Structure formats: C-alpha cells, structure tokens
Image (cartoon, rainbow, N blue to C red; front, side, top):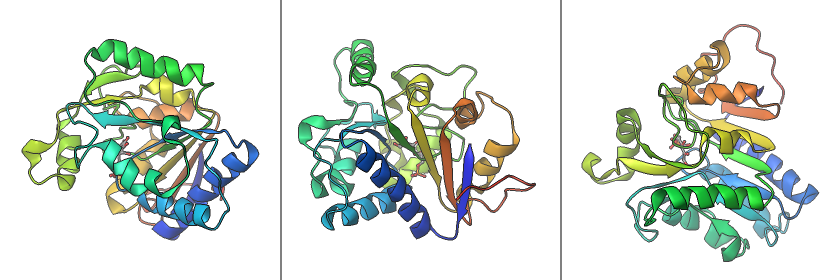
Length: 249
Ligand code: F6R
C-alpha cells in the first residue's frame, strides 16, 4: 500500500480527482467503483468541477457502487441511489444506463447479488475502486467478523456502523440493519484501489491498517494483499501513524 498524507481534506480530494482524471484520460471507458458516505463528497465536487471545465468526459465511463441499504427503495432520501445522484451523477455526463448501484429491494437477494457480481466481471472488472473506511475497519459494508465474504452479498450492519450512520437519519432506529455490499473479493479484484480517510475519528483505524497484520477483525487490512493500493489521508487521519512508513505523494 502506498501512503500519502496530505495537509487537508481539499488536498485529498484534489489528489483523488487526479487519479480519477488520469484513469479516464488513459482509458475513456474506465470502469469506476464508487463509494458513498461523507469521505468522497469533496472528491466528487472536485471531479464535477473538472467536468464543467471540460477536463473529464464521463460519456464512456461505467460505474459500479459498492453498496446500498437493504430495504430502502432507490428514491428514499437516505438511499445510496439518492446520494449518488445528488452528489455526482446529476452533475456529470455519465450515461444513466452505465450507472450501476446495488438494488436495496431485490426480490431474490442471492440471485440478485450473483447477477451484480457477474455483471462486474462481464464488463471486464473494475479499473479504479474508490473506498472510504469505517472507524471499525470496514470497506464497503464488509464488517469485522470471523469470516469475510468474497462476493456481493447481504450483510448485517454492525452496531458501530449503525451508530456512525445514524447521523444521516432522523432517528437511529431508522438506519437499516442490513445492506447489500460488494464482497472482499469483488473489491480486491479491482485493478487499482484508492482508499481515502479524513478526520481525527479515522486516525486510529489508519494506524492499525499500517501496523497490524491481515485480519478479518479489520477487513481493510486485506488491502495489504493487493499490489496497487493508494491510501490518501489528511493530516488528522494520519496523526497516529508512527515509525518510518514510507510516503509516496
Ligand atoms: C460507503 C461505504 C462505507 C464508507 C465508510 C466510511 O459506500 O462503502 O464503507 O466508506 O462507512 O463512511 P464515511 O465516509 O461517512 O466516514
């Protein structure tokens, strides 16, 4: 994993946007894996700005989102469908039919998950996967557990994740308890992975990511097995990093 500690959240967004812009300029039909949550919001703002300046063209790009709350319809105000349209898709020229977000209301869940997974493979796999990280080390909604699932699956959210995501809902009881998420294998199959972390509440998990081994207690630690992972953190998220971890910026 290559680490890059940047001064501010704005610098992380700008650097992340550089990677996305570069991927699309090298391969205009790039397949992007996208995340929701607060972390990528400024990165999305940055790439919207670059699109408006004519620097990025999304017309051939295809996107696959990591996850969606199970039980929320696409038009629910807190669904990840709504989030992605508001934060990114309605502002750029990615064709609607090339946008893929897991359904939160599939009728046959297992069959649906298999088809989402298969479609990613059929499209040639993800070129660049953008990730945030939960304070408990989850990526997508692959929560710490004795075992992790390889493929897209239905998962029960941990109490910590429900607690953390309650800020987006009026009441904690409204946070769905389940989600559909890409699995660890789906994520690790991406050709390149960009993990972003912002703020002091991510400092401890970022330290653990670099100073513990690969463990299902910290799903993000599996990223250490991937040959092309770039971790971009702001000064606060990087504040507990110790020792001589080499930085690449
Ligand atoms: C979102 C996702 C999650 C978030 C993580 C961090 O699609 O997959 O893993 O990246 O929960 O969330 P924020 O960015 O809100 O701290």
